[in-house]
Length: 552
Image (cartoon, rainbow, N blue to C red; front, top):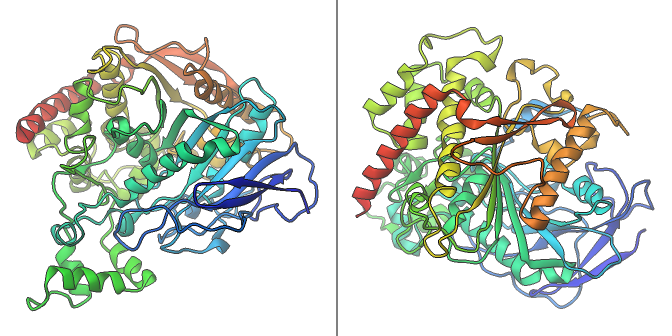
């Protein structure tokens, strides 16, 4: 048994432990001293509580130390598609034993075991999952090895991870639900806000600096953080947006879950004798597993999304429009934005965008473009249809369509606006650092070589998941992880990732390219599919102008 640690949060004391073991399926809290250097952990700390479709509130307080030795359960969700792909591989742990619950409002703190009292920079991770799946207990999101590696560097930092509600439990938005509880949806986003506010209130108790917080996330997590560029709350001063920005996913102008009538019919709630309140209250009583199963039958990528809220400054208007005007929080200093080389392969494989109707619906869902614009955009990638040879997903036009729509164009839009349009309150430009990841752990590619540097491929490098490459390996994967870790922790410490990474500018298009073995080079982002990219950018600007007219 190792020594425990007591810290005092605003809700009550929590007991952590010293960890000296490699990442595994189970916590090492009750194991004897292990072979690795020590770090501090507090797992499964309650940060909030809420009933179904209510906004998160602080948890009920407690007085005795709460043992925080293991991750909490996940919010209700289907199996992650990446768990389906990689389950059983060395270093990939699913942690299914933790189970699922609607009361899964927990977060985790990972800190260096340092003697010095100095307040450390804090990094808050927001996971991805298409707003449909994901949990901080997933081993791919475990930052233990990252914290351990940076502890002996010049840029040690604390990392916080947490759960937020996903799928229908976090993102259902209907007129009836809004009328009954006064909220238009976005429950998962408010969970993320609650995590960030918990950090601001409590992180000093764990050795962190609440005034030096970097929020970082991937995919849907990056989308949510991009949305919080204008929250009116001092949640962070820096952002790292991996494979996603505020432009990754669609945003509904009103609370309108399209299959709502079908959902009501599934539970025999279509009767005109029932009021909206009756229907919502009955939906709230349906058992978790049954409700999840039924709502997942309606699922398609993009169905869960943010809903514009007239009561919130950040998402009362399209975020594209706000950033284009420099209307974002003045305390946000610098941002890293990046994508992987082959972002679209995984999604194309699952959603078959080589089918014309699927590609059209994807662009409408993600970007809100009209039929004429979607048709013109798809026409650039011919010949695309009918079904192609799937032996190399990387080269399919339908793969590139998805990458350009959801990743390349939003990244370049954010970079171009943040570096040319001054913040409306400070008059200053944001510092933007852009990257393109062209490497991933070789073990991930085994059996999936045709996926290339796919979505999520950089995460094991960021979190130093050395269990996914050979034990004690000092080869190219270990070197790549060290390079990522140094840039990320340096950025969290000072707001700059290091002298080898130049700021993005409109003239130079500076983008850092991550290569095998920790090697990097500087390229020009404007040279990535320039013809297609310009058409997407023009369509985006036209759409922003039309949305602005509608809002006004």
